Length: 132
Image 1: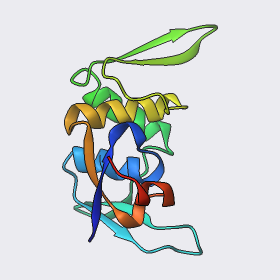
Image 2 (image 1 turned 90 degrees about the vertical axis):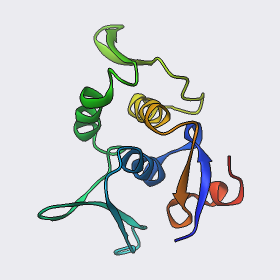
Image 3 (image 1 turned 180 degrees about the vertical axis):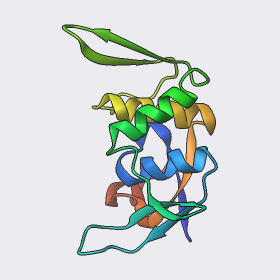
């Protein structure tokens, strides 16, 4: 599997999900596209494969924040009429337009570092051309 180093501040989508699993040292499997949906990411568990997309599932992401958040110095606060605002103690880059993305990037940065190797098949076209 060919991979490329990508800055954690540029991670999005399935590449971010892979980075989270890799940083947590979870065994993962990438399966080919089904119905044109793009590659699919799974974690290998004792009972078989389980889809792994914390970038799309805030419930799964929140469980990770609760487990690793204190280590990664993530501070969860509520501001502005109860809207959730995540303040990351680690710089995660200016391109994070969603709080879940910012938190996951901070977690990967804390657990793994500023750049991580991502399989080429999980990268966007722009990311495939330019790397960290």
